[in-house]
Image (cartoon, rainbow, N blue to C red; front, side, top):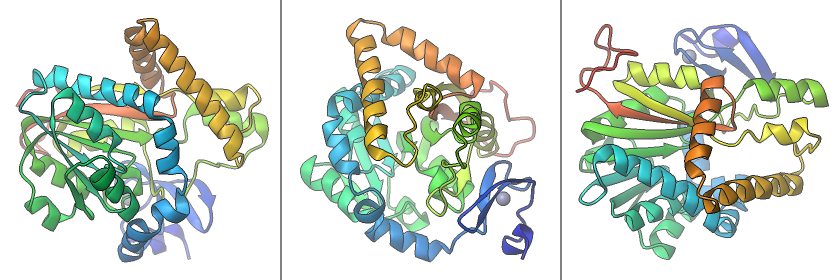
Length: 321
Ligand SMILES: [Zn+2]
């Protein structure tokens, strides 16, 4: 069976293969994703029940341990949104895939009214019971979206790469945003040049290819294009620290979670030291430049909801709603 037979309508050159999945640069979707796309019902069950207990058993503990650094990262994101919204007071933020609620907690401290949506039971319970946040437990499907008010900003971090239909999620988010509202979307920057260099230098397989949990593989350019097609005008993009530098300097953390945590500790130390030195603005400009080069472990894109998705000529223009 060819990749095309397994996923009717999806077609494009093969980029990589792993675990019975083929990564294609899909011409129909405009971004790379694996085929075959797994059964949505089976995926939904896995995220509700097993994701935090089996796939990411240490995630909540690590996030609690990383709290000072996470508060810095989340506080900067909240400040960026407040800056573009003319302040936080009276503004509403929705976090799609809010996990344990750490980002929303930072937004609440910044003065925003906050709400989360989270399918994973353990993470939703942490957000609700430990942090005292308002959380819709489940997926942001059409039924859940219809029950929510409109928001001034939506945050979706490490969400779109998991979904069989990321364009459908962006349509729902578009419908939940007030006119001119903001979307902040964070995604792994996979297949980036430093990963390719590390594969070559350390004779690694494409370790970043992680189906069935990661289905979609965006570049800064392909997420910007998808956002434009769904009625969003990209305002800016920032990378996060290029963790692959550790691989290229000899710390092979692939398949070595303890070394991975040690590398992560160095990255946190760097960012906290820059903040303590009053150089967070310089760090932001560095990370904006890295996004422009297509480098960095994740890419965080800020976009504004504009009217009339799919209006001809809209993509890439600086048109305000
Ligand atoms: Zn496709």
